[in-house]
Every structure is written in structure tokens, then in C-alpha cells.
Length: 80
Image 1 (cartoon, rainbow, N blue to C red):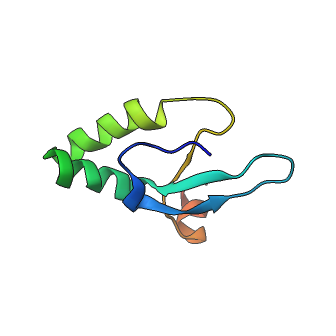
Image 2: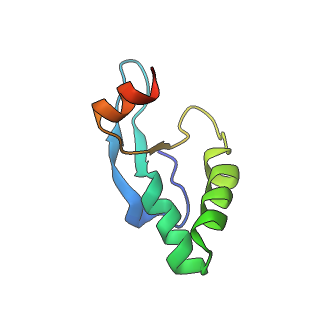
């Protein structure tokens, strides 16, 4: 499984899907907060950096997954 360097504290588990390899799953907001705390970025700068350099990095089928936590209600509201 591939790891996102520097974000071990943001791991929330392993993702599984039929017919594919297991993938490490990270909490996206925790990753951003790590950048804020560790690297001294302001939140907006850290989010931009994370979205471009981490979410934007495809390294094959074992690329980690980054989760944004929402309730089903919030998901339904955003999809209307």
C-alpha cells in the first residue's frame, strides 16, 4: 500500500473494494491541519497546497484515498 508522506497521524483506516488492492484512507481535514501545525501554513494556504500536491497526485491504482467527512444529510443537500 502506498503512503502519503508526513500524514501518518491522519490515517483513519484501510479501504477495501471487491477486486482491488487495499488502500490507505486518510482524513483530508486532518492532513490540512498537519500542514498548518507542522509547516506553519495558514489554513487556506494549507488547503490549496494539499489539494494541488496531495489530492492532485495520481501514483497508480494504490493511490491513497482522502475522505472529507459529511453526514448523509449534507451529501443530499449538496447534490440537489
